[in-house]
Image 1 (cartoon, rainbow, N blue to C red):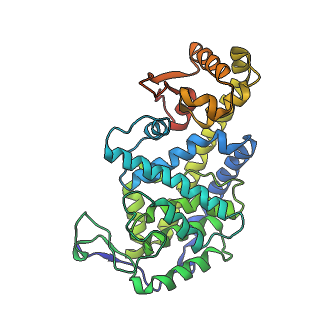
Image 2 (image 1 turned 90 degrees about the horizontal axis):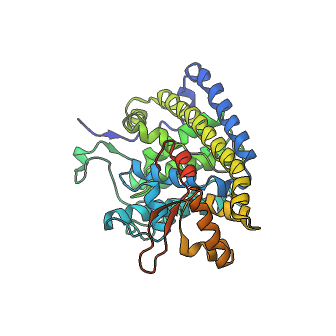
Image 3 (image 1 turned 45 degrees about the horizontal axis):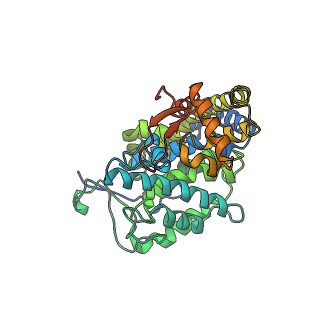
Length: 371
């Protein structure tokens, strides 16, 4: 089968969007997003309490590109546990870079609109020190590339993006569309995501960057109050449909079908994100009294906040990182373990302290009983 080539001359496609097919999906998607944002606004310090969801998004977005690291492995690695293999260590570093790139993009959006400068800086951080770091960090590709089985020729490729010589102008057109008014913001975002993936502006990291743009765009447009929207679970669970939908845009001009898929993803993930955010908030509110009563410490709520942000952690670093006196910190951890709020997953080994987990929080973040 011949490779599908980039849809040159067919962006933006709004005049070819069949709006009657999308209107029934728009209301439910917007309503679900609004309900999720309402819950997000009720979460005190969402960057802390929703930290596991942010890590899970980085894990799932990276997994779509072939990494195998789990959220638990990422958090255990941050707590001082060695990775199971060099391959898994590389996977973990890619996930950590995803989080760092997202944080930097958020910082830049405090003073800049979402633009090529933000995207290029996020790319530089995303690939820094990991596989692909030799692939022009922060720079658009200057050579042809194609997508297909490892080692395939361009004739054997599944998809051939736009030529490198036409890429600067195409990215300028993408940026222009990004920051112009549109009939509907969610449809605009669906189009932007598909176009970014089709342009494939970098030699590596395009898929992750394209998904990173989703919460950033929703935040910039005021559809959510924090840049915390987790869409990759839907795409990862439907990976074939996700890729087929993107390919069909170039092959068949199937923009409307792609927008239908994307709107469904927004609605489903807004509902799932809402359930998890409420679960985390309920857990937090429900733990305040027990933790204060168990530890009998003035640091109880401070420690609880820290544990929500670090649901897997090393006991030896708890006192210094949480800024709690060492003796008090040791006593608090002992009490929390005795009452099974915390659980040991790796006993102390040499200089490395005990690695502890807060299972109730991670079970909510993963959406299943993982601990």
